[in-house]
Image 1 (cartoon, rainbow, N blue to C red):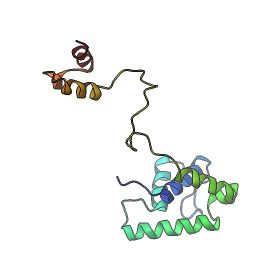
Image 2: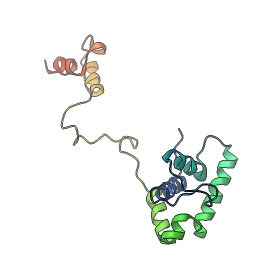
Image 3: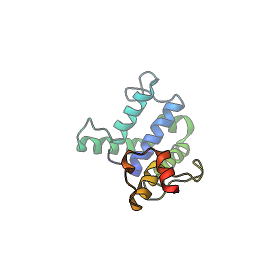
Image 4: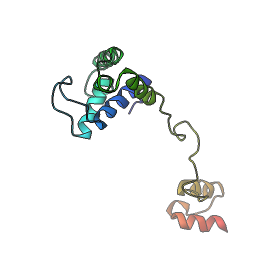
Length: 147
């Protein structure tokens, strides 16, 4: 799945915020409130130009239309909470950081203590040329590496 641009992430953040606050409506904002999370996601993808159901040209036009609507303050969030609140929500979504693993960093070990993952143990076993490592469980790999 291709990653979203900053403006697309911001639009998705705004749409999901509107859904969470009960402001998201179907049919150009005139229909009933959206109750389904899946429907809210579909609306967000369509508005942000990230859907795989339309051509790239239509996606680009959809994102341009949405950004114009956001600039004019014609979204449900801007009408209820004010344009500044909408700007904050969009900025928050656009600046949302990627996880450390997607940036090439290592995961935090705070939640797992100091124990290694099975993949890390397997890599150590491969470096030490331990036979039968591909069929070993995590516990077996730990035992084999401790000797």
